[in-house]
Length: 452
Image 1 (tube, one colour):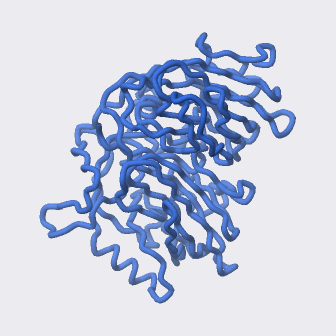
Image 2: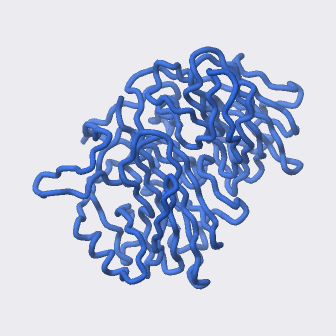
Image 3: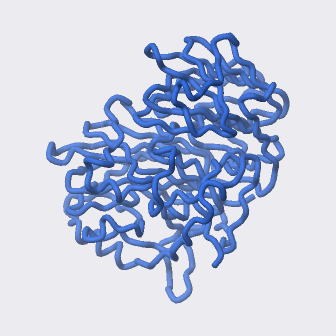
């Protein structure tokens, strides 16, 4: 077993925005601070009180990233039922961590960030990306099943096609996929294993859909997003038990002309899983079914984002670095559904306002909001523990250097031994005591260090 970080972008369907209609994706062209956000400047923003973004994960820690700006107000974070209030105001634009959880017992946790607007001149709250730490098996094989695999069944067959160009759909694994516009058209996959992840696309013309696993409704989801993104996890589930299973995704278009697409699926055998908690994951407007039932092998739960390590490790799309220092890829707002071994970073403060557009993506552990505390005092407290992060070598080889589906992620040459679960303090030479486990920055969470 090993501790591993997973990172998902704001557009990833595993983040549940509620109400969905009151959250919009930020503008790269109209917002002068957009370049400070990750993934070429993507973020999701709201301006209404009590609008929330929720994420459910299996793991031991979670880091929510966003911005503190002059038009941002207070927000609350609820972790497993415990709520803390924070201040999102900063005179200069600061992009970093909005919340860092303590080290948690390994298991299923829910984190919700809510807009606590109390001043109409500061109504904003945004989400950049989320990183969480979990435990996965260090070995095990993942079987990648393309949409053309005989294990997939498309019904009715006449309502499904493979002509992606006519629908202006791009970025598919192996350049193939299945697409439908018919209400009720379904894609079923029969598989043997304890975990499954099905990938497709989200975008403005992509449709809602439902998921059924082993005959049990798993929820209703929505692939409709402001921008098109390929190879997104539409659903994932783990701890299903050994044996044969069937997953069905059914298109439920909300309006004529919407598409529903299937790209590929990854299946992990029971022996390769390091977690024993069931998982289901869907799009950002999902309404998962909270019931559990069926046979013992069908342990289906509404656990969004607690993704099986083996599936995600081997489901990385074939791309180079997604560091915000890079130009955006041809796929546009790509979904950062990535993973690498945990490398505990040194603590770093938010950048100053003068460096708010710097490509050095500094972060700090957010402190609870107190009405009597000044912003400068908070910044001073963070700066007292500052340290520089080692730079990443530029990516090599572009997209062709990415890993193939089904190929395990190699351990980076500089990877540290993962922290044991339950570690409350981290010893750093030359300092009497550190602040404990600290959040990874964006580059650490999405790309392993490379040797020199």
